[in-house]
Image 1 (cartoon, rainbow, N blue to C red):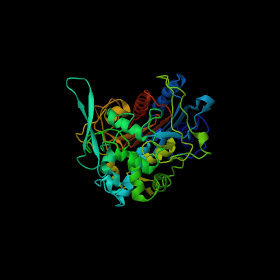
Image 2 (image 1 turned 180 degrees about the vertical axis):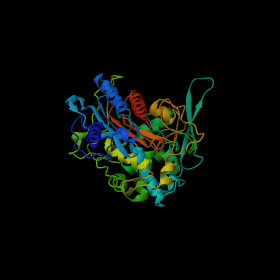
Image 3 (image 1 turned 120 degrees about the vertical axis):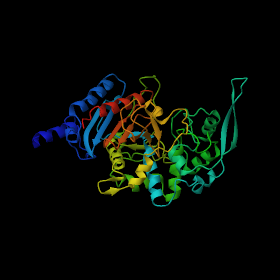
Length: 437
């Protein structure tokens, strides 16, 4: 291929032919064909998401794909702010909700590598309030369809590993079926039906106290249930490092990786770049309420409080694909990344849904230390490879890392609601069908 033709293809497929992009590319950009992908087939992403935007099912999105460490696809679709008719830029900032969890999980593993904590350490080593805990146990009356609850002592303490893999017995009030725990969370300010997944108003000490006093929904280490565990892990990181969570992650991850738009709140000069959802969910008609990230929160919510761009998160994901290293910066060792992307559940049951069912509406995934991990080539109703790891966010964001295919994808949108899993599956199948080698 002549140099001029190759340069034109690069311009087209990193999105410069669609709209001016003044931000720095997150990774070196190449033609998809240079790394075994099809330009024509990647164009199907444009067509599919163009239809979704035109149909009013999604306000807008940014999709970035890298293979072999090089950017092959970057697109912005639809509107950043539908109400004001503002087009979606590639450098739009998104509320990433649970995609904050992998950032915090990597932060915890940095401290493990420094010998400041071990995965087997009890949480009480850093937060003494967790030394003695109670577990809520449901009892069903066989003669009357009524559930009652009693509490029993915890069989053992919660460990750092439990927090990373969501086997701590902590839950989300928005998800759990245990009404005793849900009510305790609501009373303590850990759950509110008025705003999902928002505990940023609790100062760290009060959050720790509230979580310690509320009963566990399961005996520690026995059941996978998605939870506030990563929020608590953030408090552990603060205790072990002596720094505020936002400062620790900025110093150890965000600044080294040049993730300049990632954090827990936005200063006034960046607020105009914040992507906004529809006022009402297209599927349900219900009002959409997302967290206010325009001010410094009382606590940095490690489970749901982050903001980022597709470009920033692509660099984070590429670091993980690079076995803990990106460019000349090493964040983690290769073995730590391997450990995080391994199965840490074994035969433990998952309630009320497995990791894959929760995220994509399909089984086939277990959980590691901060990520869902694909177990095999089959079972899951989406393409992918064994060992692929991923996670997503409540407001519609999603990413995955496929070491076997040397592939990373980040999908950013502000579209919470029941359509989230559909869009995640859609972008996943469209990226994989573009692989040629």
